[in-house]
Length: 162
Image 1 (spheres, rainbow, N blue to C red):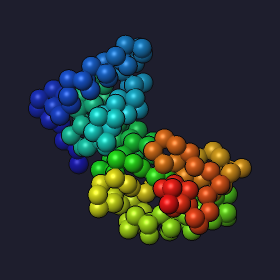
Image 2 (image 1 turned 90 degrees about the vertical axis):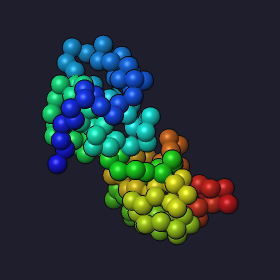
Image 3 (image 1 turned 45 degrees about the horizontal axis):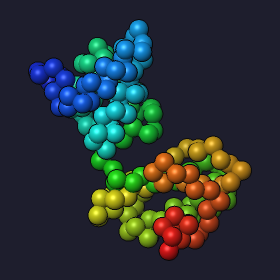
Image 4 (image 1 turned 120 degrees about the horizontal axis):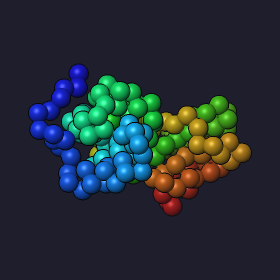
């Protein structure tokens, strides 16, 4: 259960608060900034903790439960710590039919992690994603912000240059 924190916006840095306020200046309704505010926190911290979510909710004059709904719906907001580089492996039907499971297994073996885990060195996390919109080049993965297309079982070589 998310609880309110007594100190206003406790847990947010001045830089995060300033960036969120700058986004809020573009909209009449503070809640319109929900995703951008969460992305700002994530940019600074790598993920959005419960304490930060509550602080953002207070800043946007919304309930933590409503903001949690936004955060959990939008699959690029991380509510748990993730590696510095997140690898999203598409698990849409097209990617699945063309070998996404083998790609994912190859990556997991190479990094010695299970899906959703962080590598021991804190560098990588592998997560599924519903669709990356490149079905004509399936299977695909997003490594950080780079789309890698036409993957095969040798995905490790394509992604890590090995």
